[in-house]
Length: 113
Length: 114
Image (cartoon, rainbow over the protein chains, first blue to last red):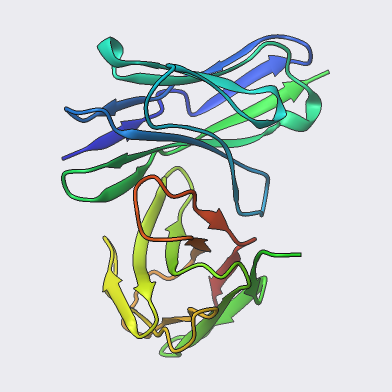
């Protein structure tokens, strides 16, 4: 079965520090890759997505993600975290074979002053 | 403003009761989705609809039912057959059903069992 893994359940960073959230997927071909953010009690908002082409993707709010085929990863990064970035982050994968869409279990980000 | 609205924000269900969650979108999207979110788990697909009067079961459809009589509306009914309904329910829509399509989410409804 296809799967999406976010190995870090919870991450804490200081404001101004850099951030990297990990996402790994199991799928043979190149999937469609997404990162969403969810503020407490709210719906999800798309940060960025990758389908093909340049493996470094820029998103909203200063986020970027890099697709690494050899590692089956699509990690989310931000050079300098702001307090408002505290939220839950979900990686999602769409795969062609079964026309299915899968979400990871999420990483909760806490930002400390 | 275009977007997706869900109501109510909180919903309480008694034993043996059916409850209906509302989802409305004014984005003119063809495809709509219902997801269930539990703590520590990713989103799980309950039902989706690609077009009016058509809908398909997702991964966890048992105990739920939907209808799609209008393009902008996709209500979800949690029936008494759903034995563990306490969760956060998210409705989403996309222009079309497709893996490349960005899904836009509503603010969610939290369902609690009395």
